[in-house]
Image (cartoon, rainbow, N blue to C red; front, side, top):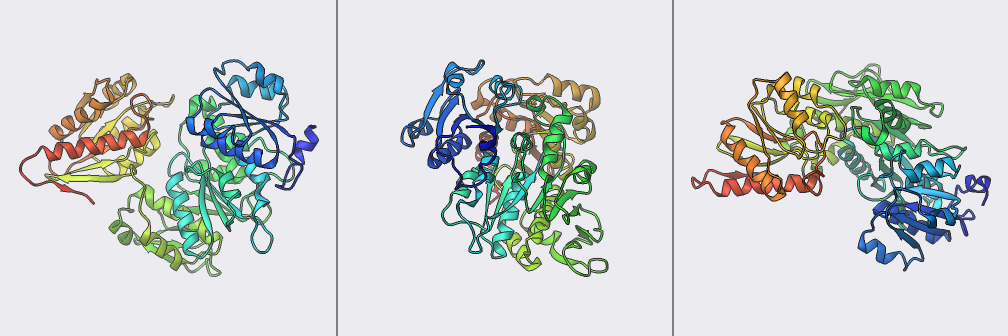
Length: 508
């Protein structure tokens, strides 16, 4: 099939039959792509280093062949297949030999999100239109904001679902026979790198988009800070209605200013300060909207209060910022302030996001294992200054020096975990030498958190917080950030259970 014909595949009902597609990777994303293409009648070859047994079992059922093996060079089965299109799972970086091969060969290279956009008309609304898309990215806060936005939209009477990097592939939602009014799509920088390769008149054009913030992360994947920034900036391309940006993060404003958007799209700012007439913000403890009302030059609409959010554990500054961003996206789709307020009354953070595990003898234990980079950990430390800080893990090429200097210096103590602790220890020795520093040198996963809790319990005093905010990925010692958080919580509860004075108060 010619490149021209491939470019013309912009509908579920286009001629996909016989298209040769190589799908790289067999995670949840890779399988959803293979399954979709098989349903469309394409010839599909999955190429992967390893295969989840369940997905591998299902491939023959849907009529898809697979090659499983090392991918440090292009396998002959892939070259012989001569694909018309390559669809890569987001784990494949630009430097991967298979990606380099596809680019050098001039083979169209898509991600699963582009494929989903091309076939978005499989299920349409009663008026014949496909679902609107809302795009959400940022170094931190993506998943919380995606969930918040979807719940606000549902509260407003819209059929909406959170998809993408949050865990449900976009292709699964596009093919759902029940259909949706809005897809709220969380996008990683990896997915955006692929999405930014789109060309043609039918490239993805969202109703609204936001980049919540930007800080160094995933540099080993992108290769540089600029490349990471450019990937994130692509979220605003061709936005039709609302480009939502963080007024406290100048880079996100610059992204909006540089973006090629659809004429009429508005820039909508948010931060924790008093909002301007096209912003959302906070006035005297009240979250308000000055963007989506006729009298925005002189008036504002109340969404909720910080006091109300505090009752539900949602008043940490970075969480309030996420709420404002989600509210802007929801308001762009006509959701009322009352519906937003109702949605917030029901909303709860996911586990491992500033989750209070227990309080014992005046010490509060908090699991923020999802803080997998310095920016996220900095937000946690800002919310709990003077905490006993549990930090460390797989740094992903990111420098923690500024975090230690700006936030770590105020910690009561630091407990450093991870296989490679040298960079963190050196940063404390240079920039926060007065902070008591403890290293956990256990190599067995089962022992790490028990030792962390022992050390933390010994140094913490009444009124203190022990905060797991690692500023690093978990894969050097744990299966995931969830596994890390759960092991921390289990160790805290086990330590409390060992206390015989009966003063423990597990947090519900």
